[in-house]
Amino acid sequence: EDAIPQRAAYSAAMNTPASIDFTRIDEMGNGLLGELSRLREAAPLCWNDSAGGWVVTRHQDVLDAMQGRYPLSAVRMASRSAAVTLAG
Image 1: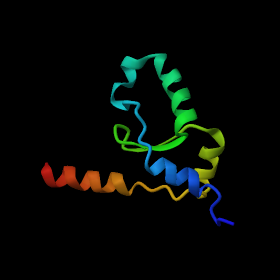
Image 2: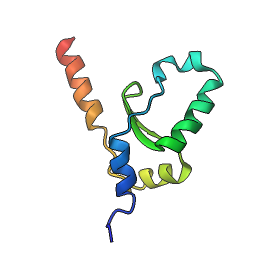
Image 3: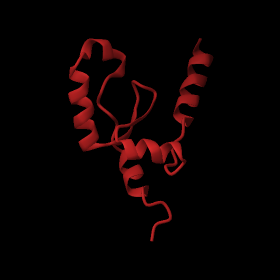
Image 4: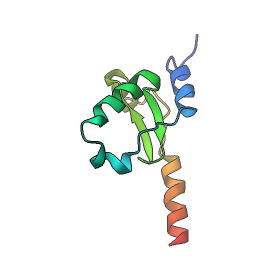
């Protein structure tokens, strides 16, 4: 049995980028709720480039992530920050 039961969900999330553009969240208004519902069904745990981080849409996944049950990392954010610093 897998030591990390959520490994399959995590692996799928690595390959399913969230399509919501969080840089345009003000323009989305109440449409954001529908988008989040669709995302929750398609990929409840996924990386989002526009947010620069993980999007976790299910309550239990949020709890699991906060308790370290998912190997989530902000490493991508650190490399992005370094690139901005070097370019700036």
